[in-house]
Length: 288
Ligand SMILES: O=C(O)CCC(=O)C(=O)O
Image 1 (cartoon, protein in one colour):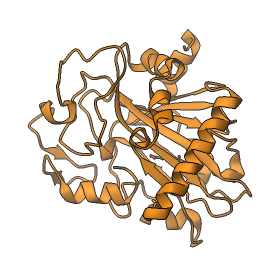
Image 2: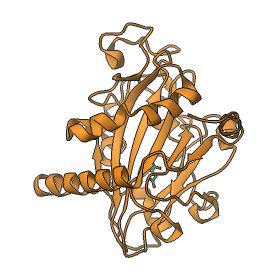
Image 3: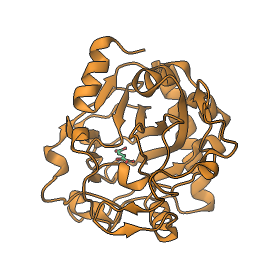
């Protein structure tokens, strides 16, 4: 649970770091689960999710990002983690009392060549009416500067939904928003970073000799409707804490999208309520 100061920090800055949310033993266990999962998946399909737009931040280096969306479909250990009381307790403090799953995704940035993420907001990928959406990044190993730790622009959640470039996954212009100038959030195994989907964030290249292993859990208030239908991942709508007051049977499908069902995309274009092209681009970029 968060202190009043931590809640105020999140309100002011759009993120909060919670040290030791998981014990070192739990983090080590989930690290192993993640690497085992990457090993299983790599045997049957390509799991690299490097953004096309990551090239500039990687300075032309060929990089790699091992990824799995919706890890709760792959291992019961991850399903248990999603309903962990410490994780959902912090989420409830920020958006509560009810916390609903949007999606989960594991990232492993391999040693020496772990792909960076250009700076961006998550909101363009799955905009919602009340902007309740938050991510928790759970660290399963230490993530210092040289490992390409998460970086944020403090207070940027107050800027609202910003225009993004669509090429190679929604991102902000890399010359105006260099990853290296954002605030690094160095973490230890077991630490968690919570941030609003409006907070500008990204991360650098992993140049260290160890992998960086994380799980990102995207969560919303169940009463916050999507602005249009997109990114309807399997398992979306699962209640992680509290109840769904809307009584939806298929939360992603039964919801009435907010507004008129169309959405002004962050680059100024108008998008259809269901954009297959956008969905495919998101899937390729590790966002689906
Ligand atoms: O894990 C990271 O380094 C950043 C992930 C991220 O920005 C995202 O998935 O939106």
